[in-house]
Image (cartoon, rainbow, N blue to C red; front, side):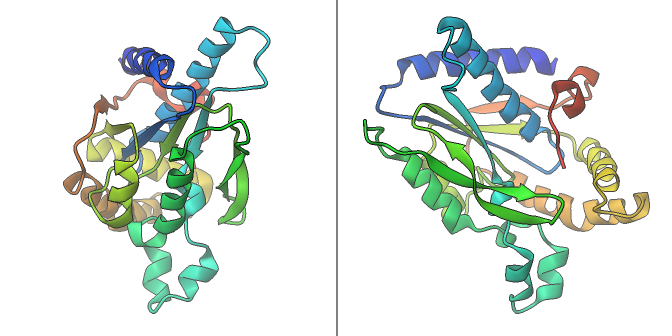
Length: 247
């Protein structure tokens, strides 16, 4: 059951957090192919870590110790894609590794890897506005109180370029493993619901020609990871059942 896997990860991470020096953050990267369930996992673990902290220190709910940072905010904007040598391919392949700002993501990880000091300030990460389909700069605050940071994204354990360098700065790499056909069913449903595709046929084409092509690279070029979570067809594990919106 997914729930059992999550409970084990929460307990392991809580123990690692308790053993981490107060001047350091515990950085965890959660990766997987599109439709694997990595967003649900990362956001849920962050929430449960904060719940544990609140139970241990009542009254400290305003200072969460875990932060969740999705990689969506590091999509290149549509204007940046249009400025590429082959804008048609860039737009159609949006979601591929080359359509993300890996340098900006690496810079964020380097900043969060620095020691926490009394004068440390809040760091901001970008989010992604699905209505306008572009990133929003400096929209996710990472307060100095955030001692555990869970990053989530397709390429966070990719053995290439700056993705690899960012991965080497992490304390833990987790990978969510899923059957490609299961992922495709999830993606088709998601694309239609989100308006990314006008119908099932278009959604299947996008999944086959973009999402799962990216997924093959993610699996084939993966670094060694600390934890592998097997994503299963579990009604209780669907994003809506966990209170997580995935687009």
